[in-house]
Image 1: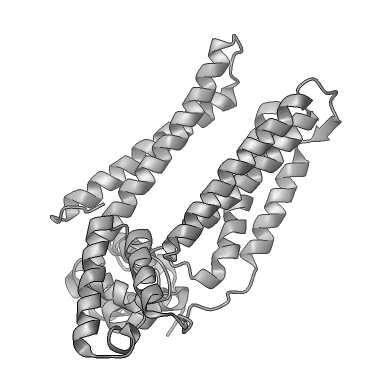
Image 2 (image 1 turned 135 degrees about the vertical axis):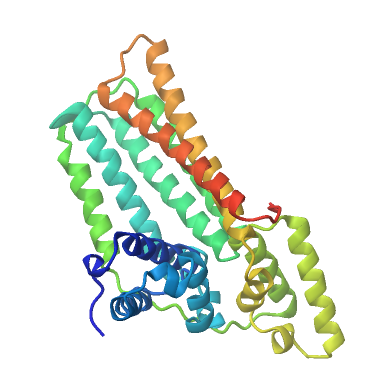
Amino acid sequence: MGTYNETDWVRPEDKQWGYALRWRLAVGHSAAGRELIEQVLVEAQEACAESGRPAQELFGDAETYADEVAADRITDEERAAVDMDGAAPADHLQGVLLAVGFTGSLLSAYLLLAQGMTVEMFPWQLVLLTAGTVAFGSVVAGWFARRAGQLRRSWSLVALAVAALGLGTAAALPLADSQPIGAVSTFVPLLAFITVFVVAWNMPSRGRSAAQQDLSADKWFTQLSGLLRGRYFLSRPAASGYVAEARTTWRESGAAHPQDVLGSPQLYALQLVDGSAQPHRAQGRFLAWAATVVAAVWVLITVVYLWTGDQPSLWRWFATAFFIVGALLAWRRDLRGRRKGSEPTDV
């Protein structure tokens, strides 16, 4: 079997079908690794070339076919070991560093374009930069903790982010009238964040197999609730209902531990929501609101600039438009996702 090449499709519509198949496998079935996705695409290309028939006719709808492939070739244990974005708990540190490095690189590039080759650095700016980086990293870590079902840890990390911003602001205020440290090249933060991103990108994966955990019965049910609410975005009442049903099943079975009859919390949570579009739609709504908050904050900053009489630079206007468009696209994806299904989203 050869290597997948986008140019090897017989028809343009087959190439678009391949894009849809790849996207569905990568996003909708995150446990599908690169090797499996490439293997499926190569098989489809070869089948189209040998038969002379279009991919849609051979395999049907790309998304439906992706669902069939996932059901046939990805075990429940592999799917349960990662969240809906394919992140395993063992790789959360890598995810945090990637997010910090990527976001920091974008903001540093904006600084370079808006301010030029050098910028005068003040002590209060350095303090706020440090606090902001810690806060952002804590929020991302909290997001990953929530996706792992660790709701208390998630809220603790969010609280750490708030504390970092508060302490950073308190420490920066007395330094408002301090003399500048000096002129700093805008390439310094850009190269620093790019280095963080590259190092994180090349970190070896620690594996995606679900580790066996020695949990008490109560902690087993706590983790099940956390996974249903944090990883799959179910509402508290819906998650509580599933947990109550699981308790009843366990007690009626007479087993010594819920894992003896229900399996791991990760596997059981997956089985409860498997086949439902509800978690993906709820995640889409959550991300749309998050994008809206980011856009609103950026718009507020721009308005403050105008209110104080400062004229925002062209790049600030561009960034503001970028975040607004990003929020609109997120809501558009959310709306399209809801139109494709008929189930009500329980958030």
